[in-house]
Length: 138
Image 1: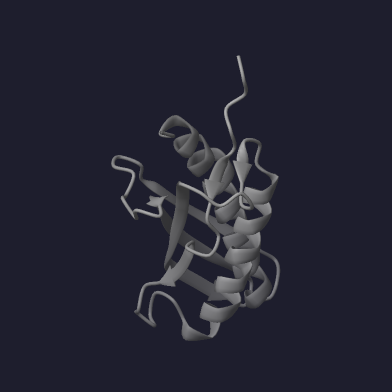
Image 2: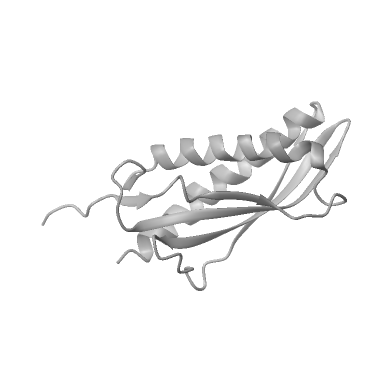
């Protein structure tokens, strides 16, 4: 029996968005947070068994939404949700709800935000999104 082909994840269609509420997501963290999440998503997807980001075709895209960033002089706490859509149809995977919260302590707020978002994206991609995509592959 032949091995199943790798599942394609389109990084160009993967999005990183933020709730538009300065009280929940301070504006100074938006761009650095987006870069940290993008780097983590690319790293985890490119390293995942059975996943390809190179062989374009029907597959999936991920959509991350930062719901909250709480940062102070000692660290940060972040909450992110994610959605998986089929690529290129943009059909959402019904019943797949991804959400996580993480904290990083003992560092400056910028570094703490990047660390907690990296941790969340790593968890959402490797432990939740990849298994869901493999389960729902057509």
